[in-house]
Image (cartoon, rainbow, N blue to C red; front, side, top):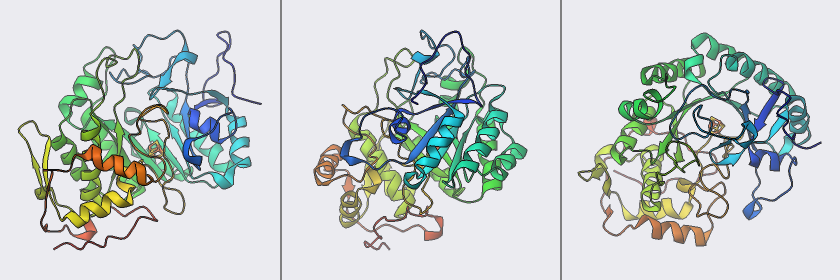
Length: 384
Ligand code: SF4
């Protein structure tokens, strides 16, 4: 069997039906095709699905309620199609390919039935395979008791799609919109509740680069999450056709690479906020750090890989190929470790001349750093 051809006469909704990312359909041999770089891909992304789609209306999202599309089968989410699949068929495929799976994720949309259906899907997927499972929750629908229910059903990490990193931006793009009802403070209450239920480094926040925030605001958000022992995962804005932000270009490659570099330095190399200097527009103007540190971080390449929930061994588990860029485009985040040619290109894109101010930095307490993903090179550069 393959993914289902959609019929306008038949309603196929969660929990008995789901959508999976195109990369997941490739990995589970539901569609034919190959990944670039002989990518070994095992992160399976599952999306709850309803005839009415998502009841929220975020300006940048392909699932937004007011986005005009011919039908649900035409909808894309982060610019790729999400094929429809029976949940029983998904469970059978997961069991068949369990050895190569690294992470499962169920994404909720904002819909009245989404929590109950996500809980049911969590139980069904968890009963099928031992692969670690994340749930990307819709905060308006999930309080502490529901988080506990997801935990007890087999969820080991919680994701929260904050996306906009300031309250003003969040309100402009997600609250003050045609069908907007999302609230910034509710998102942060949910982050706190998830941190209480799931513990340190078991919660993550998706942060989107290029929707109107400054570099300084991104760094402030990374710092806040780091202090809570909550991961920040980076996503690169890539305009979704027909969304309200379809005409807005994504961030420059230079800005995106610099954000990747700075986030990694803050989280995994103990660089303090004081080592960064911003220009009048809040853009990163200088990084005070030893050149050896910068060279080491660029050479090992992990700073530029996709940030996502880990596999059971602690290695990268959710790598979302095609999440922030299409196969024909220059990679934004790499689902594989960048090779030497890609590292050379990254170095060019960073435009390091004038950015790095060599020097020691007052290193952050290691207890306040994020735990590195397994397999990353050890930090050999020291720090004062
Ligand atoms: S990083 Fe991947 S697995 Fe983790 S919550 Fe986000 S989409 Fe899900």
